Every structure is written in C-alpha cells, then in structure tokens.
Length: 195
Ligand code: GDP
Image 1 (cartoon, rainbow, N blue to C red):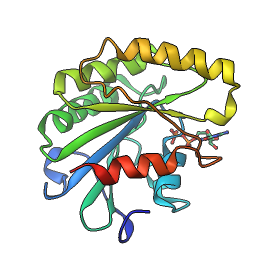
Image 2 (cartoon, rainbow, N blue to C red):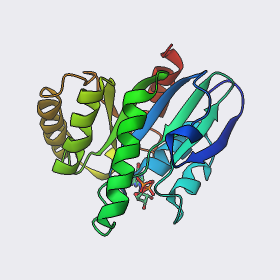
Image 3 (tube, helix red, strand yellow):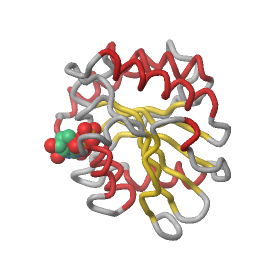
Image 4 (cartoon, rainbow, N blue to C red):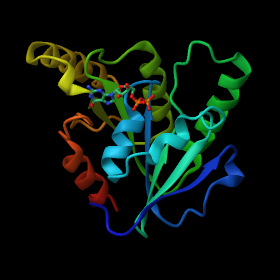
C-alpha cells in the first residue's frame, strides 16, 4: 500500500490549475469503459476514489490524487467517446498535449488496454502522442478475468507487436484484474519504485 493517505486533490481544466510540480507523478489513460476507475480504486484501496472523474462535468478534467506525501496519481479523462462534440474533443486534446509535453515531474504514463480487445486505433493516437512527448508509457491490460488463456495470449501478442512500433513504450506489460486483484500489487510496486 502507498505510504500515507490517498486523497482526491483537485480536477484541473487548464494548465495554470495544475498543482505545483513538486512531487513525482504518474498518469493513467485509457478508452472510456476500459476499467480505469476500477483500477484506480483497486490501487488506492478506496472504493469510490475515482468516481469523481466519471461523473458528468468531471469527465474532461485531469484529476489529481495524492499518494501519501510524495506522489501524485493523475487520472486523465477517458478517450474515445463517440458522442463527444468536436470542440470538446479538440479542447481536451490541446490540454492533454500541453500536460504531457510540459509536466516535468511526470515519470510514467500507464495506458490501459482491455485484455479482450488489444490495442485499437483510438489507443494508437495516444501512444503516438506519448512518443512525440517523450513520456515513457507502460501498458496495463485490464479485466484479464474476462478472457480465457488463449484469448489472453493472442491479445497480448497483438499488444506486444503494436508496442514494438512505439519508441516511448516500456517493454514490460502489466496484466490486471481489478475484480480479482491480479497485478495490483505489481503496479503499486512499480509506482512506488519511480523516482
Ligand atoms: P472506466 O470508464 O475506464 O473508468 O471504466 P470502469 O472502471 O467504470 O469499468 C467499466 C466496466 O467494466 C464496469 O462495469 C466495471 O465493473 C467493469 N470492470 C472494470 N474492471 C474490471 C475487471 O477487472 N474485471 C471485470 N470482470 N470487470 C471489470
């Protein structure tokens, strides 16, 4: 578990709203419905920690959580909403770009990929943005309890092949199930180990 309290800090809609860059931070990105809120809740051990980011009006915010005294966990809005207005998407993409390119204390981005689906076109866009921003990213496969071994292996191979095309990709993939708890300790240890 993370040392010290885990708390919601604030939702940010523009760069000047970011907290002071005085802690190591990691961010979480993923398609809407990939299981991001569930994973953040499992990681922090707090049931409704990430609910704020899923409530209407909060979905376009960058949500900051403190992990003890020395780290931030940053929940980026889910992407790939088919119904989002173009202007909203553009505004969000501009903020995301500014954040990824300008945040000195960002140590790693965790990109969530549904184990049932593998890397899709909409995921490729963010992976390319992470490459361009020179932000190391690590893929976290979610909902692994929902697939059998053969499907898991096939989608893992597809994901590995996709990552090979991205220079900013960290090679190790973390397999998780928020439902069953698989991979949660591993992910905590990775975050705790980042300096
Ligand atoms: P978000 O939109 O990315 O924040 O996704 P949520 O965390 O809200 O999850 C979307 C749906 O997937 C919900 O119905 C969750 O209960 C379900 N879900 C999330 N993680 C898991 C998991 O590890 N296993 C299973 N079986 N379902 C999950």
